[in-house]
Image (cartoon, rainbow, N blue to C red):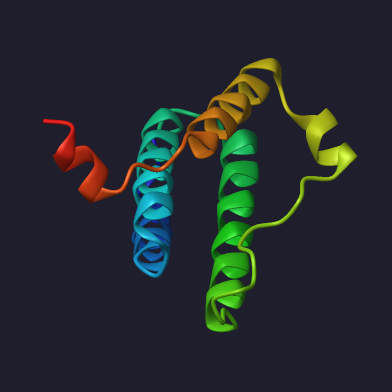
Length: 119
């Protein structure tokens, strides 16, 4: 469980990330919000060493999102490519999650008009 001293910081980070996601296109926001919520829930009971890595990575994500969203002019891409070292550092279950995220983000986007006409 997050210790009381860290709980407030974790909650602030969690809320910051969800606020940053408000600036994303709707499909990305929905996918990102679901992923963030699940990851924070899944990592409530991690050990001290893993907690430090978890928070470090989510802080880096929030900094990257802040930077990219502040300079976004519509044509720029969000995110960054994972390095080979980053990929090799993932555990098997993390690679599985990454693949699932890739599959979800690769699905075609149905517009509201198309989904309404199929009824």
